[in-house]
Image (cartoon, rainbow, N blue to C red; front, top):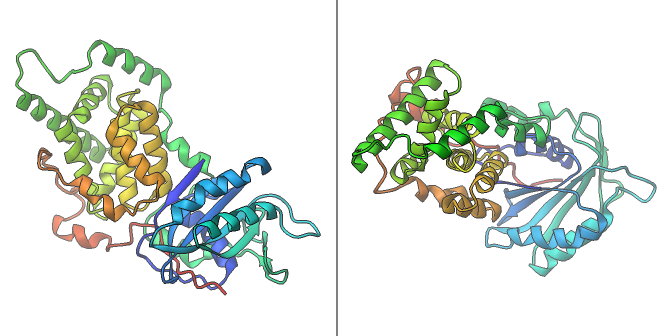
Length: 375
């Protein structure tokens, strides 16, 4: 399993390797375990670029994993990486996984990239030991992750940090598997519940818009998940290209209250809809999370979408872009479409529309971005 995260625009100074390691849960969105985390150094080496997390591989797969991961940093933005390996126990010869570090260094050299730092810790917890692979005297214990500057910036931005990757992934699990299975049967029997006999396509689109607006209304009133009829209508609504494009547009700009509200609606629908209909809601969730810099959630949602419907071209393309570590700024064009319908959604009533742009200043809705100036 891999996780790809692009940094945001909030800067947070990390003065030493211990601070960097302790900040990983807040950079990723969850506490990594038995993991390799690669942090790309952007040219000219003053800030972090792409962040990748992968499970630690068995020895026989170390070379192939290094060869699979490192090329994602081989672009004009990066000139090297810092590697953090998490898990295992040190012995008299030093930290574990040294062979894997050698494979990473080899793969980096193939692409003319540098390994700036190679760090190890058994776990990302207060007081856990850490050390460097290259210098025996480069060692210490981790500070409290909650007291790092990145933690403070992340908390201020309103992000949650999950205890593990599995806890984050559980967000996408069906709320009630029996309900989802029942809806699969209902949708199989009536795949287009919004299209009544004799209806023009424009009338179907209008009905779909009303269903989307109703879903946001229920979200604002805290009415809970949709019932079967509502879920079926929403599944059909999201499958209509002009509606899908209009929903994607809600993700940009990412810092608005409406974008955050949309993410909650899509997350709810991912848990309420069966495959293949779930793919459209997961696509919306993945794109919205990606625009906000929530790389881990975005990747999980897009994987969920492609699993639910491997034929969903938009989900497959966006998942590929995520896998390649594409800068989210290059994907904002997905939120622009000449065919999108007008959903007629205003900002949540608790936020004045004129204040929406200042409710969360640009950059505060994304993971903090540390410079690479480690000492």
